[in-house]
Image (cartoon, rainbow, N blue to C red; front, side, top):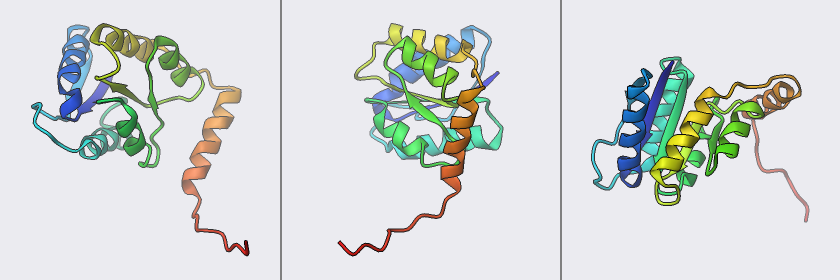
Amino acid sequence: MKIAIGADHAGFELKQKIRDHLQSRGVDVLDKGTDSPESCDYPDYALKVTEDVVGGWADLGILVCGTGIGMSMAANKVPGIRAARAVSEIDAQLSREHNDANVLTLGARVTGSDLAINIVDVWLKTPFLGGRHARRVGKMSDIEKLETAPANRTS
């Protein structure tokens, strides 16, 4: 399994801990940065990780920022990405089982490192259930393909 991982300045330290944890378990990790706690912009790292996931260079991605919200929002702009912010092990489990999440986002300012590592471990070991959930995931993919424009409204 190959995991792409990235973070902004707020998530830098937690990303390092997660990366080291994964490598100690024999997981191949593509560290996409940032490489310091210097201020930087989270969308840049969300794009680097998601490009690896949709391009097939990584099986899954993990992103860390202050809350996990910004990374999730940025990652979900990329077609083919289903990023889920998890703050608990059950969030991680259900995001894989029901939503086939291919990117996990975490918040370093709201989730302690021990819990974050537990979340990562649960997320990585949990398979997608398919079945009725596959139909729903397919509908999300269909939404990505829509060309949308503001509706002409009279009111």
